[in-house]
Length: 219
Image (cartoon, rainbow, N blue to C red; front, top):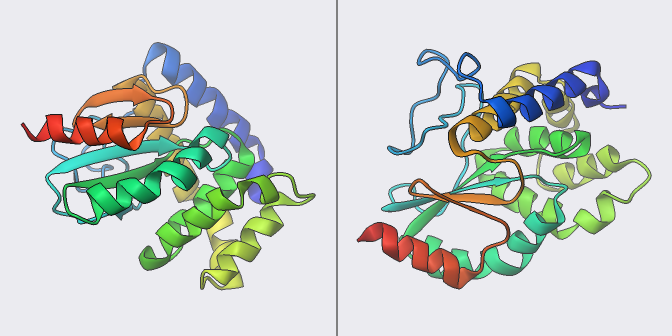
């Protein structure tokens, strides 16, 4: 079984749940631990060990942060049914950029997040799209992590890359910190949750809703 079944997963889950209720303070990354801030208004800057992934043009004027879990059915609905139009109309046109952050709800979502974050930057978007498109397959398979590995290999990762990702404790802890910071800074407790220029909205959002939020943020 993948190392994510270790006791540290249970500790991480407990810490995230606690942070969402009482806040964390000391668990927030220090300036030396935080990555270079990508988003000026962001109150939940990820730690340095967490590679940010941006869909769209990096210099787009409006930022949408999405907190999602790769085992979340509602997240899959957004990625499979809404994101294509968001990408075509808002991201590819340079009106906004989407920053996807992990908020894994179980050990298999953690495994998928570890693999995806360690995929080459150019492969990330496609691999995440595959995980969401095939969510109904791999989450119901007898060995979900083995199926995740197969998709990763098809994306261009090597067996060694995938195994290293699953054993990457620094990244595991960074993902945990992303969850804790999301709960402390934005009160996030469920997925998907979107933060658009500081405004938090929970649940699957339509293209029209996100478009309106982007247009309002530009004023």
